[in-house]
Image (cartoon, rainbow over all chains, first blue to last red):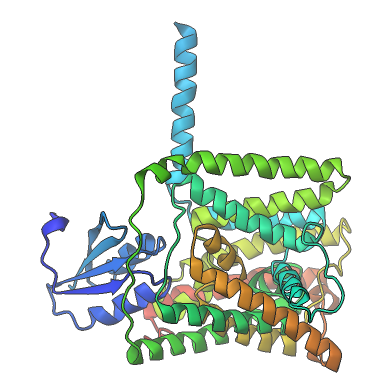
Length: 81
Length: 392
C-alpha cells in the first residue's frame, strides 16, 4: 500500500507525547472515525512503534503500517474496521 | 585464502549479532528472565536490588547544596544503590547510542508539569512503602516479604486512579503536539562509536573500583549498567503490568512480570533456605499500611509521570527531557519526606517487614508464591479476552 499518498479521514498529532498518551488518544480518536476510514497518527515516542501496530490490529481494525517522516516523526495508519 | 574467509566470516557474524542485539528490539520475555538473573546476582553479590535509595541520595545532595541539608550526605560514588541506579541510566544511554536511538525529546508544556507532579507522588510513595516499584514491590516480593505483595495491591489501585485522571485530562484539556528536531545523519553515524567509548569507560571504572579495594561497588555499577541495557533494549516498563489491564486489556506485561518474579523469588528461596544469605535480608518493608498506601500513591504518580523509578532512568538515558524533571521531583520529595517522617516518629507506625516463611513455613510459602503469581497472570489473561476490567 502506498502510505505516502494515503488519504486520511483525520490526523492525530501526538508528537512529543510519551507512553501511554499516544495510545490513549488513538483509542479515543478512533471512536470518532467512521468504518472504512483511516486514522493517521503522528508520534515521536519510540515505544509507539510497538504499541500502535499492536493495538491498531485489534478489535476488527487493521493496522496499515507506518512511515518515518523526514522531519523526525513517524506517521501511523489505522483503518477502522 | 582460508584466512580471508576466516576474517570475513567472523565479520559477517559480528555484524549479524550487532543487528540482533542493538537494532532489533528484545522480547520482554527474554528481558524478564535476564532481569531476574541479574537481580539474583546482585543479591548474591551484596544484597537486595533497589533503585529509590539512589534517588534519595540525589535528593539529599540537592538539599545539602541548597544549604538546608544538615550534614554532608553519602558520596554518590560510594553509595551502593546510587551506583546501581546511575549504572542503569548509563547502560540505557550506551544502549540508545549503540542502537542510534539517542535523541533529545521535547514534550508539550503540560507534560513537564505532569512529570513533576508524578515525581512528587512517586517520591512520597517510595518513602511510605520503603521502596519504589523495584525495591518496594519487585525485590520486596522476591525477598518473600509480605510488604511486596501489599505494595503490589497498592500499585494496582493507584494505577487505576491514575488512569482515571489521564482519561479525565484527555476529555478536558487539549494539547498540541510539538515538533521535534529532525535527525542529523552525521550524528546518527557516530553514535555507536560514542556508545562504545562509554562502555569501555564503565568497564574501566569497574577495574578502578577494584584497584581501590572496592570491587563490590564496581560490581554494583556494572550490574546496574546491565539492567539499563536490558531495560532499554526491551523497553521494559513495570507501569504496563499495572496499567494495561485497565487500558487496553493487554496481559503481556503482567505475564512477563509474574514470570520474572517466579524466577527471582524462587532463586531467593534457594539462597535464603540454604542460608547463603541471611533469610531476614531485605525483609524491611512497612507491612502493611506503609506498603499499601505507599503503593497507591506511587501508582498514581507513575501513571501521571509516564514512568516508574526504573523506567524514568532508562528514558533519561535515551534522551527524554521530561523524565529529568521527574527524577529531580522524585529525589527531592523522597529526601524531604523521609526526613520529616523521621523527625515526627511516624515511620515506625506504618508497619514492619514480615517474612512470609516465618508465617507460612517454607513448605507452604514456595507453592503459594507460585500459585499467587500464576493467578495474577490468569486474571490478566481472562481480562484480555473479556475486557471486564477495562475502563476506557
